[in-house]
Length: 136
Image 1 (cartoon, one colour):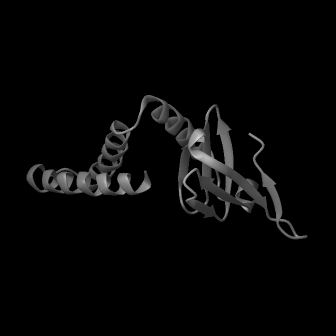
Image 2: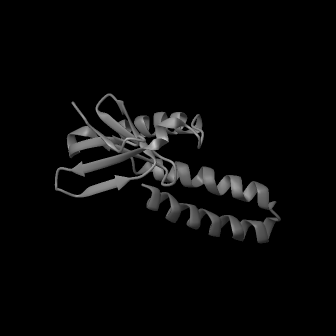
């Protein structure tokens, strides 16, 4: 999803650059519009369920701060096909049949739980890392 948004954002920037040259669109307006256009185009390719959980994740993400203690964890996601992801400085939250992964440096990620083999959070402690596997 992050890659798709970047690609759409670049396309929106190119269109708005053209408008900026032709109509004198201020750069600050162009930058804001490019981000909004990219968000809307990415949502077009989402199912209704994914769009709802993505909007919820964005709301939660907007309230996060870099010094949030929950970012002191590692997260492991294993898809049903065996593909795996491992995030440093991240945490998980459930929302119905969805799993939201918030990372300090890699944005947010949303997964349908039915597509996952398993997921886990590892807590960083002074005594060493503690493993907490999902119970769901």
